[in-house]
Length: 196
Image (cartoon, rainbow, N blue to C red; front, side):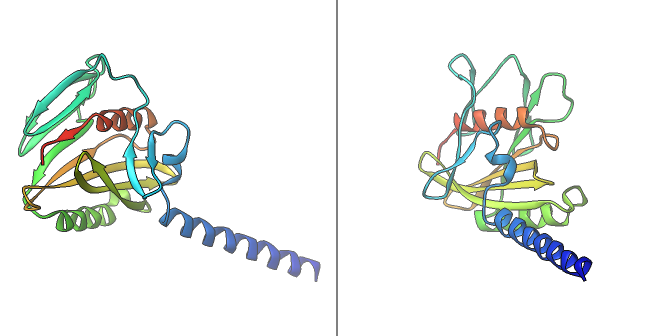
């Protein structure tokens, strides 16, 4: 009889823990975004803010296509044009660290497309996604976070351009769990200015 009671108690506690985890991870910033090493913050109005972890006063400024941001020359090897935008490369890395591109669709359509891509891609199988409002200057957009096993796996930022006929897509392409690059991305994003 004791075994049955203990089994029931363990089952109830486990199910309660699963319920709490699922409900809290859907309605909040991903766990890894709240850790000390992360720079993401949500203010009281639930608008996501990119917060720098480094002094950017000596960083070089990149300006092109109505965008301007600072970056560390000692870690960024190149900023190369790509179709409808540009890619940022870290020194010693063959794939881009971040992509900035323009998409010919309104913000809502772009958010829905990226949401579907994330959910259908085998790369993100089993991942959790959270979308938050974000604002840079007077421009409001959306930021989409992906976490897998409570570890960051992707950050996509989308802003409407040209009276919402296009969307600026900024995709951070870090490796899963790479908080060092996540912090660099957040610091670069904290210096971003966009001409509406």
